Image (cartoon, rainbow, N blue to C red; front, side, top):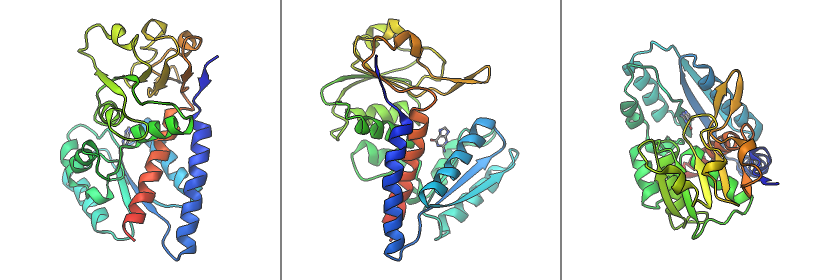
Length: 285
Ligand code: GUN
C-alpha cells in the first residue's frame, strides 16, 4: 500500500512551528503577524478558501483582516483598497483571492500589490526573484508542496519530475522550483500542458508526478510509473464531493506515495501562506 502524504499531519507539524515563532515574536515585544485578504464577490469556493485562511491565522496567533467587496466593484475601487493595504503599516502581507470577476484586469491588480506585502508571490517581481533563486515569497501551493515533500523526506535530486498544468499559480512556478538548485529541487523537470503530445509517455517516465490540471480523475493508472510519487493538486467539486485530478483508487497500488484529496495539498497551500506571512512580518521588523 502506498504511503499517504497527509497534508493534515504535515500541516499540524508546520503550524506548531509557526505558533512557536509567533510566541517568540510576542515574547520579544514584537507584533503578531497580520494577514489581510481581499475577497471580491461570493464565489463559494473562494469564500471557503478565504475563510479557511482566516481560521488558520487565528489558530497560529496571527491577526487577520478580511475585506469583502461586492462582485460589481470597479477596478479603480479595488486598486484603492490595495493601495490602502500597501500603505497600512499594521498589515504585514495580504492576498487578493483569485479568480476575480469578469471586467477586472487581473494583471493590473497583481501589479498594484506592493511586492514586499505580496504573500501570494504572484507579483512579477517576486516570480522573477523566485526564478533567479533570490529571496522572495514563493507562491503558496508550490511552497506547500515543497513542505510536504520535506515533511515526508521525499528525495527529488536527479529524479524525473513531470508537472501537468502550466498555470501561473501552480504548474509554472512548481516546474521552476523543482528544477532549481534548492533542497527538494534539482529534479529533471518536464512541464506538460493541454498541447502536450504523448502525455502518457512522459508521465510513465515520471518518478514524481504533480497533477495540476483542474479535471477530476484526469490521471489514472495508465499514466503512472511503478513506484512513482504522486502529488494531486486538483480540487474538483463533483456532485457535492471533492475529487482530485488523480483517480486515487486506480493508482493506489502502483504508486509508492500519493497525496489525497481532500486532506493533501489544499491544507499545505494554507501553510505556505502562513509561512510567507511570518516571513513578511520578520522582514518588516
Ligand atoms: N485562487 C486559487 N488559489 C489561490 C491562491 O493561492 N491565492 C489566491 N490569491 N487566489 C487563489
